[in-house]
Length: 258
Ligand code: PGA
Image (cartoon, rainbow, N blue to C red; front, side, top):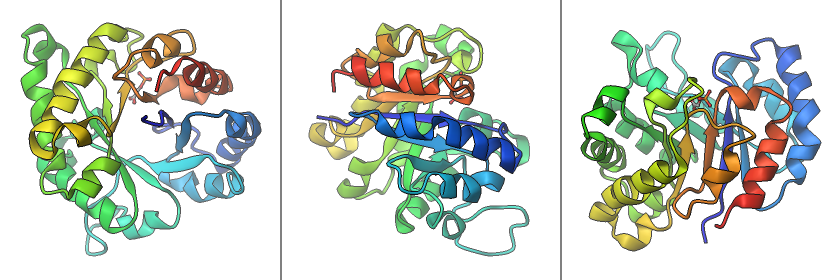
């Protein structure tokens, strides 16, 4: 049985402390009461402390949206795992929006360093993978996404691999309102993501790792994804910024077949 996990990625929204805290307070009680699914909020760095405070005494976990792999050093503007370890339980790594940020872009190699750094500091990585439209149309999804998964998991111990969360997020589905079909997401997660994990860590680990789907998930389609046997949750962007994110999580929990 894999406990499903739904995370709300606020991206560069909810930027004012007062706004973030008031939203967190608004959804906190109802979100805390949803059973059968791990619930995670991913606020921007500057409001993490305030949201962490607002979420005290709840089961709602927090994630950072990225981090550097080094503990400290001359890296102006970067956030290290040490800085995050007291504030959150999870860290999103390799989000496609961060894989595409020019000279500071996250690469397969730096993401792997970050995955190791996360475990060294008690953080659980949410590793994002996913193909772009061109790759999808050229039939390259399996090779490309499989490669991303292998690179991210490189050198992990079995115990660490088991704890990873993977988010399969086809880039063309992010923020476009055009989600993958649940069947396609299910197939890629089962064959490609779990397949790549199984190659290095065996079938049992591959069947234990939790894999989310992400890309235009909303309150109306969440149940169809969660009803898929390979899908263990969702990484939600835009739809996590509204109070009915609670309803989305509720429907997800209800539809999950675990
Ligand atoms: P979206 O974003 O739900 O707004 O498509 C998902 C993501 O980027 O994680």
